[in-house]
Image (cartoon, rainbow, N blue to C red; front, top):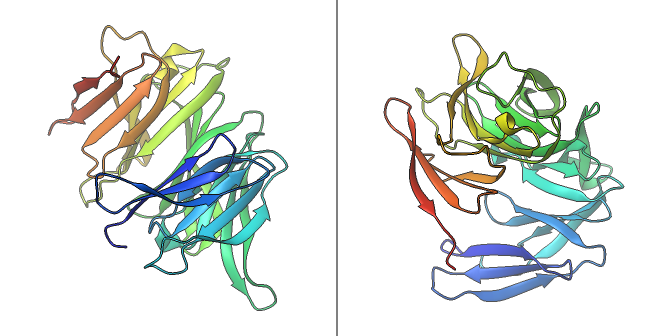
Length: 298
């Protein structure tokens, strides 16, 4: 199983198909997980041995590979998160336990943890429900800061909220560290922004000299919010600063759909309404440049 890669794909019939690629050119279908309620999203945990699936009825299902040498997956838990569909599931880094963040169709964000209690054995419980006010949560990601775990959430009004965990093993204790909009000019404020989607990607690089950073872009009716901004934590002044805007002079503030770092944290891929994939890198001076544009084959 060390060289085995699993890929989960949501089927039109709302089930989940799991593909296996054992470092070969071809892949094979090894499992199909069906749900009469419709699967809306899936997420692997960090080891690739657990798969969480969010359903249209607001339930979360957890599948486990009981034998590392086998490709079989078994449903080990199912519980209700919300009455509305679950749109996204993100696993908490493993050093903080077995836990997931769930975004529901009503815009709520909740955190669920698997616990062991004498009376009930292993089960999942909600340890935190984040305040939503009037805007909806569109995306969420976890990142390890130099001092504690951080959670970044993007909202439908164009705001970003950064929370930090107060206790290493107490996932219910979070405090709001910062709130700002996705703009280079921190003085600018956009009060009537309406965002349909957002994409957050936390830089996986870790070092004593590398500050915590993430990139975020929106798909909205407010062009200044859309372009990807790289946010870095200023340790001396204890605040988040936009250190780069990933756009070209000829860009028209195209909406951003998805962004992802490579495993090294050196190259960032972005996609948006212009229909292409752009690859970005920064030099030793922290200046970002577009390295390549990948156009879909006609």
